[in-house]
Image 1 (tube, one colour):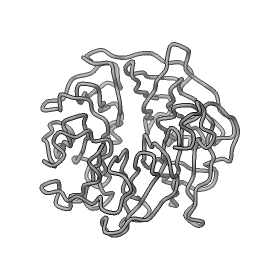
Image 2: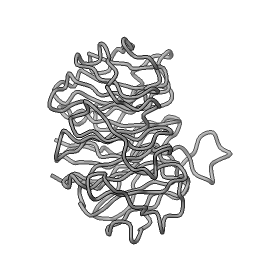
Image 3: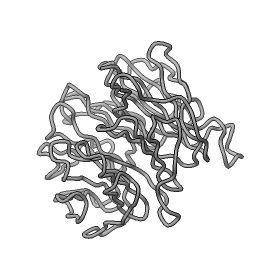
Image 4: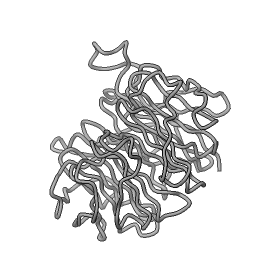
Length: 338
């Protein structure tokens, strides 16, 4: 299985670009950012879009539509040519690997932050927004709000349980919620943080291991499949943690980064944490991801200073380009070409 890095930035609206899927399945690292320093005076940053990082050329290639405030991307595992993007003005979809795009939400549905797809049934699409949780049962053709049980409609992030796709875990403005019926209703998780959940990740190697970054309450960890949570990383206890990541193979290895906090890494399952920010151009970390292609590599995005990666646990940092970017999201998704 080949894996590449996909970066996507924010813009206004463009159609047609190189396809991200056609021959073999890929795990793709994408990056979502808003604008660059040089474009602060422009309402439509011209360098934004979706960027694919070629492993062979070690460089970025723009492949995305020009959409303002682009926040997340998902590829349908059952139909890899179908791609969804969560944007400020709605959700857009491509059914031909990115050749063409169509807005699939109405004018009442906006400010989407994250999108997820049922791994067993591509008709079930889930979107989070500042206005609540939204779902589609027909592959994105129509959308409904589903906020039953939620105390706070602001929904930042979501994960679909790959072992039980009817189970969804949602990060909201007042903590973590769970649904056991595909998003029809929600129950707040015990010992969840009281504040907004900014980012969540689940271990690929151990499905019982979860991590979450919060607004003002630092990092939380679950070792029982998200049923209960405990705070970790005392140095980040009051931080806004925008990036968290679990190593794809080593259960003991995890990372977290936040605003004015830099990057912190644990190699003992969250018991102790070390600051690995030395060498980064900014302490404002906006996203973090362990590389699923290169297991020694850790990616970090910093506010308006682009992306960086380390192959030696943060002792040295390598410029990953995209200088000036404000990155919203950094993660791997499955993209493929048949």
